[in-house]
Length: 136
Image (cartoon, rainbow, N blue to C red; front, top):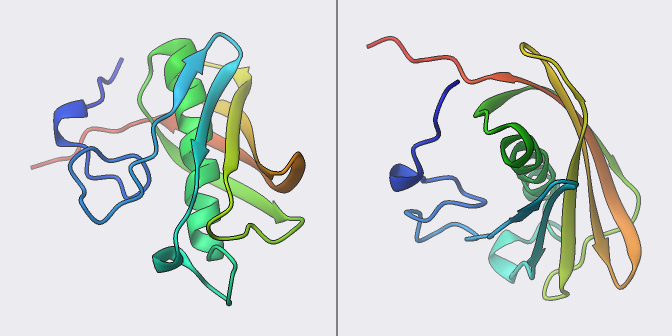
C-alpha cells in the first residue's frame, strides 16, 4: 500500500500547504466522501460560472477521497469522464460527494457529483490505480 504524504500536500483542491488553492476538506464515511465548498471568483471561467477544470478537479478529489477512505490506498487517476449538466455558480455553496463503485487491487472505479441548491450540476466517473513511486 502506498501512503499519502499529508505533510506535503500542495494539491490545488485539497492541499494544506497551497495558499493559492481551494483548501477543500473532505469528510469520509463507509459510503464515501463529502465536502462543502463555495468557489470564489478567482476560479471563474465564464462570468458567474466555476471554470470546468476546477469542477473536474473537485470531482476527481471526491473520488480519490472515497477510495482512500474506504481502502486506505493512495491512487492516481487513470481515466475520468465528466458530464456538465448545469452551470456550477461561483459564490454559491456546493456539495461534492464521491463513492466507490468497484474495488480491485490494481483498479478502482468511483463516481462523484457536485450539487447546488439540491440540483446535480456535474457528475463524474473515474478509474484509479495505486499511486506509482517516482524514480529519482
